[in-house]
Image (cartoon, rainbow, N blue to C red; front, side):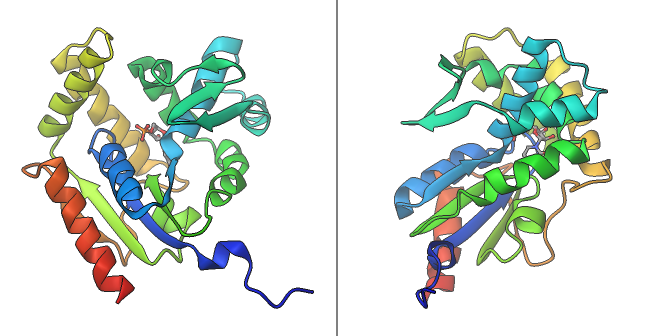
Length: 227
Ligand code: C5P
């Protein structure tokens, strides 16, 4: 038996949770790059299951069938691109209908349970930045640094609008506002792993903060924890 610590115990984990379109994905990715850490976009996993549900015509009401899709998800991440089997779905999974379906997948306990070990497997040295809804509360409750990133619905609707237009998806700001509101409600009030800050999470409101300022704040918190 080895007396060396297992690989995963030597990884510093930063969790960044928050509502949809709060900017956490962009911020988390930059923090990971700056620190040379691995990056887990847990929302992408829910979106991949959602895309599989949509493509296979599976009913979202059939929890066992959705969990089965999650269990056999033929996904891989390569050079910042996301693949479902051989199909590069990096942009496809960002569509609003996929995001809305992802939020319904996220409300199914069996799907969440199936994705649990896939997510914890991302914890590798030297560290991990994990973004999602329940990273600090359920998946990595022992994370050394937990951040809860928020922004007003209006600021998030504007950001999502810009993101979608840049990716060539049609978008209407009033529909986005409504979608965000509904998604927040579903994510916050679901019975399993609801969107909520961990008791020891540091709140970071980015309504009036640029990406670089949010990144700097998190790196400052990291530096303080490290020393
Ligand atoms: O973060 P993103 O908008 O890509 O996530 C899409 C959906 O996946 C969310 O609305 C949420 O319902 C679900 N999700 C989740 N738990 C996570 C990450 C995402 O339930 N850790």
